[in-house]
Length: 546
Image (cartoon, rainbow, N blue to C red; front, side):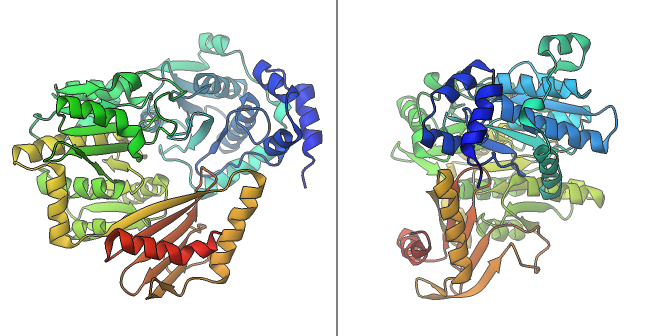
């Protein structure tokens, strides 16, 4: 058991950063427990946590400690000349954290290339590859509420580090004493050239444009960057691609880490797109598009015949894009490959295979899609990759980056909307046609939150309960396939704390803890019966969650 009081006293003695020092002084006993009961966990998704003082919070000291661990890892693999790409989103303290990480790298003799302004997460992936860096650091908490920030680490291939590298980096982080970390003066490091400001927007956008499919540009768009990094680059892309009927939601047009218009700036949620939909109704927009704060995910809604808007889920948009790319591309590789995650709809496989494409399946996390591209390249087959996506609204066409990219996804959704409108169809019409042709799968993702020390123990208890007494049926249909991805050896996939149960009728339940938030996620698929069937299946598994 950690001595949280001792740690609190140590931080009170050594933490001199004004905001952190002030918070430490005012902590209650409960505050001390929550802030110090553990270190922020580092994994393949990096760090993510509430901004504040303590080992379980994100602050300059936890940023410095993990950066020193990254630096030690790089020095162990490359004695000199290592370089790192660094960027950041619109969140509170993102700029300061990015500058401090670069300053710690400089003190270790590691050069960093840093953006002068906030940029999307896929832009960081592109930087790593463009400059041939050994690693990348992105300060972001994606679509989390305003109180969070985070720290993602990328490998030399521009992909988020996978399990082996993350575990090795964590080993170095554990050896770092928080208050022994040394950082250079940022401005002086810039003057010396140890930190270099860069801009590769033109090169990045040229690669995005190379993935263009569509011909028509006649579509009315309402766009919202949700006060994040899409604010400049997405409108620039739309202008340059000839989409001239674009209206940006004014309240969400500029960066603001407080996210004043929605508590949860996640384009998966209807509330995040509420202002965009209201504006769309006023001007009759054909399509609503929103990107999350670090512009790697995209949400959308399409106008219906009644003038209202139909939200397109992540599973649905992925199927639409997959079908559109294969049906409208002027050139496709031989033996094309598409990739989806295990929690993404099986309809994607049906659609891909109808076009003669191979569908590969990977664990949850876009890094595994990036890893698949890398494996294809290693076999001289990189050009076979056409499209990859995950149900959580992340998409990638092409291999110029190794992460989901809302910029290229926005371009493709705009092109797809315009092309189908030219054919007399909306995206809703096309989606209904796909369902009529291949059958409709119903999906729902339910998240259960377990915050703090007690929550972490509860999460472990829930997962153990599933393992000890797995469900035998899903609403009357016998479970015919149970997979524990932590122990299975049937599939060529890394070990992962994920449980899957498939019933005889094709219904499915997948259970996994989030890698970035204190959540357990339940993914439910109903092969028949619609939403009522999903409700019934959820009732079967809720006993494990109580």
